Length: 285
Image 1 (spheres, one colour):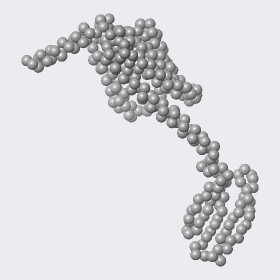
Image 2 (cartoon, helix red, strand yellow):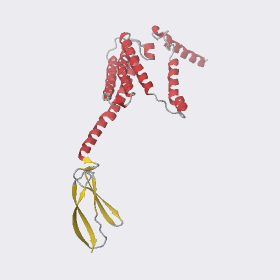
Image 3 (cartoon, rainbow, N blue to C red):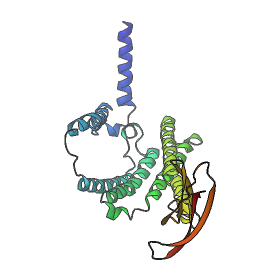
Image 4 (cartoon, one colour):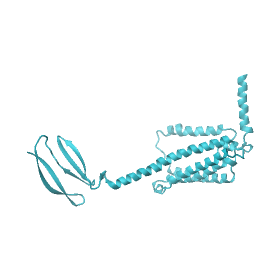
């Protein structure tokens, strides 16, 4: 009997939550009778992307989707623009729980701002899908990330203000949820921005400075030498400016007294200039 009362109390709570505590205007909205249709759609999407889709394509050639991506992102731009327009006028369109329990008013701002950002974001995706000829003009990519970060800051300020003043009796739990959601995404996007842009720019500047001083890894005008020991002999190689490799053969026989003769010759480099070179030859006494 106790189990029956427990189940009955859960059912009564569910009915009260779905019917009495919901905004009555959402009663006949599509997918708003309960969260289960929306959950089923999301799970079906995840299953197709992670399991069914890869299985169907494992023995097939990948599709060429550039045109599809351009059309899709263009449609998303139009759809986001329409949502932005509707949100600015009606102030009710949001995610499921926002429509069900807190339509209008304070819940509007997050969706309103987000749809504007999506207009810019899907415009970028559409242009990027057009290939290298268009991608070279997308220098403003990092500013899109900054725009998203600004969005999350504004959402946090808008949500957390209810902790100090809540004259409209907005459910404080939703303020916590929206604010925490924005805070989490702010740190994620900040980390991405630092990794992708700030650190990359520092590395590029350092590489450019190094490239200005070095050519093929050797400082200009300075001999880069390495000693290689071959069959008991030391061979010395000097590379100048990374262009011409000179072999100045210094053959030293172990445990022998050496007399050195010096000859001076000239070597013609690939640019046609004559470069003088001293060759030291060690001979056996």
